[in-house]
Length: 290
Image (cartoon, rainbow, N blue to C red):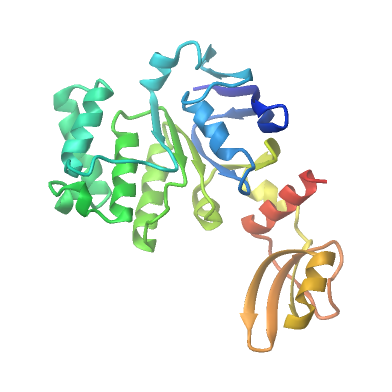
């Protein structure tokens, strides 16, 4: 499979460019998408799902524009938007049967697929209950199930683990590992640890542009020797943050323990630590904004 994003741009008006000439080539596996609020992640994924049209540029799937051949492309697509609605009066099973019919899935095939995903997402026991009784996490898992019903070759998840407890997040990560063997999975999340454990590649967006792209190890290698751990007094934190790029902080009894990006030690007692994907995100986002 070949999936190529070519100079993709979306403008809402002259002063608002959501996605700015973004180029990216994707292949089978999980590509994690990171970016702060307003970076353009959701706008990008709405275009990749053909929910929105670009102002310019194109996306090619196996050499064909997804916008010109949208129906055939959608038949191979699974999509979970950030805000996913359900029909409260339907049961989970009824809802999935309804969506499988809309997707044109054969009834016999649909029944087996629905049972499989209800089981894998730990929903079998509530499958026949009205979704009005579902928790937020259950609704999210139904959303994940509907995205996977048609064995899609392209899977787009926008914040899929919102509302999931740690056990269900682990279950979801196992599913991603399985489906990504034969599918291109694009996963946007603010939970960086989810990507760190499963993403084959990570794309970092900043102000609508691609700030960095590569496998996790190469992104981390670029900031090796730049991540420090140090402790500062609470009274000094504001001044400290104006001088250094602080990626994480933990409250301690006698102040704050910080992770800091810097070419040199930020304090006399600072110690070098192994970089994390959260550190890499902070580094590339800040570098591209300058």
